[in-house]
Image 1 (cartoon, helix red, strand yellow):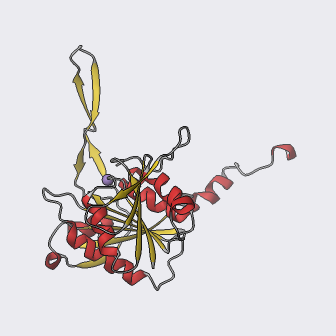
Image 2: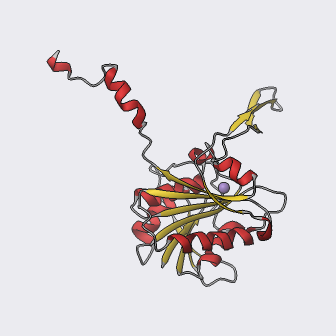
Length: 258
Ligand code: MN
């Protein structure tokens, strides 16, 4: 198997190195990742200036790696189109420093990089490790390899990505895996309002997570109960249940025939 590995925490992030190392037991890995941290850049791509690429030696590893001065989505696009010597069987992203649960997936560079893989027709998986004081990626790396191993001989449609969130506890405390749907994450007190030294107001995004009881089949609830959460996502945002309503409301008509 051949993989493209990317992330949004930057090419030297511990989680990316762990993912590349863990996956090299299953096949060939090429890393294409942002040269600096690009968390919460969503699905942005770079259009108005050129992208520069630098070959990088990852410390102590014999894994081909490229640093790109662009976004996570840029890395996957450019990687598949130009940088890799092969068309990857899977795009794998992460292991992100912090969860990507519920509505987080819309802001996440890690998930967006995996979505870019899907858009390019390559089945993709995104991996995130829940935040804790000490980030230990070794368990998450083993789980990532296990998930990829389980899915590699299945027929994962290229338009679907698998979003994996891993509790940050030792392997023996993880209860298992759960197939989940996205929950809903809400934050309160989003902005801190402060004054700069010249007396002008500025705002700094902070936000406290509101802990809400969630349905038991959500990703949020699964990781809370120390399960690895496995959520299939697709980038078709169409609200199929509203199609008929909008037609009924008269939007579906030909102006000339009036
Ligand atoms: Mn990140």
